[in-house]
Amino acid sequence: MDSFLIRGPCRLRGEVAVSGAKNAMLPLMAASILTGGLCTLENIPGLRDTRTMMKLLDVLGVSSILEDGILTIDASGVSSFEAPYDLVRTMRASIYVLGPLVARYGRARVSMPGGCAWGPRPVDLHLKGLKALGADIRIDHGYIDARAERLHGTEIVLSVPSVGATVNIIMAAVLADGRTVIENAAREPEITELAMALKTGGADIEGEGTSRITIEGVQEIEPFSHRVIPDRIETGTFAAAAVLTGGAVEIVNCRPDHVLAVIDKLASCGAKIEATESTLRVTGPERPEPVDIGTGFYPAFPTDMQAQMMAVLCLARGSSTIVEHVYPDRFTHVPELRRLGARIHVDGSVAVVTGVDRLEGAPLMATDIRASSALILAGLVAEGESKILRIYHIDRGYECIEDKFVKLGADIRRIKE
Ligand code: EPZ
Image 1: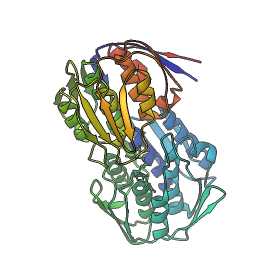
Image 2: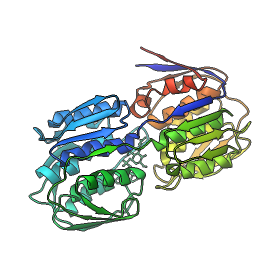
Image 3: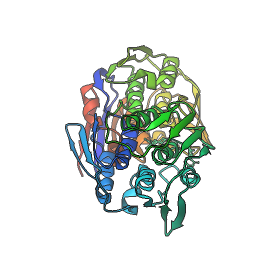
Image 4: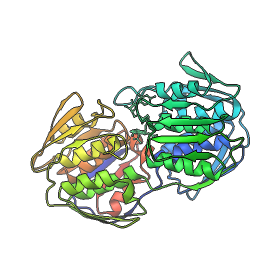
């Protein structure tokens, strides 16, 4: 298993380009199943999750080729309807093939995704939505077995604006008979992108990006081409790194309008932030000011930036409170940050971070994509050497992250083991 060796402290300076968004790419790859033809996706990041989803599509009989960031998917037919456990357990988003398979082929057998590093990740809303559309859902030996003669439109109210459930329901409803209304739908940009791509394929969708999405079922979805938006969490991660290191970083090929809540909090930390439509210039303060954070559903402060923000606040001039409203247990990064000398008290879904003057390098363990990126940030400012183990977690969600940090002046290198 590879690891990262980081020597700090450093101040990041220079320009970094953001890659395509993992969480926009994955639904779009699954949506190709609906089309029965050749789909093209541009600005595809070279991630482990990209390769995992390509492997899953291949298992279903949907071949794909990735060249220079362009993914061509041949979804002309499927030879299997089963998403096996050994793939699903490595990437929860594998469940995104459920909706399209049931919608186009009337059947799917998808392993129940397990939990993840920080706790349970239920899929009850996915299944509730598909049942409401007329699918017969059974859990059989750890697999979701879904069948449907024909899906029919319906009204679905989500108890939680779940990204995954909204994605699966949209992909099932576009080929259903009649109208589907999703109330309390997720509003993430990734949902808007999925709807835009499906509409170029002839889908009839309105309200994407709002909490009420209306879908009129159509007979078929034509193959589509779509350019994946920049990754808003990668954007936030580099912005946080600039603030934590007191550096000056120009983030290009990004969408500042997708990270407004993050910009707001980093500005409260004392950062100077200038935005254009596709660039973000972040100049960090000498030392971050403490701020209180509550994660929430988009457009609120994203849970996927909570760990990175905690790393910033470890060196703040005072105490900060972080409340996790989305995943109450999402604090696996806390024991690792403490190993560097951070002072963090966790009580349930609330973490209180008391800023310290310095962090000291130490060996660290990556646990999940975003927690791992927080450890990189902390390693950049810790004095001395930090070694982050199990960085396959990071490779799932960040493309060549060490190369991007080296370009910004960081002393970080990958140790192949
Ligand atoms: C997506 O996961 C993202 N993953 C996650 O990013 C992100 O943390 C999460 O949304 C929240 O923003 C992808 O887009 C591939 P949810 P998802 O369904 O869809 C509850 C990363 O690092 N819930 O929006 O699984 C759930 O417990 C990953 O890129 C149910 O109760 O998240 C949580 O409290 C980590 N029942 C809330 O909804 C369900 O059926 C949000 O979950 C589904 C979800």
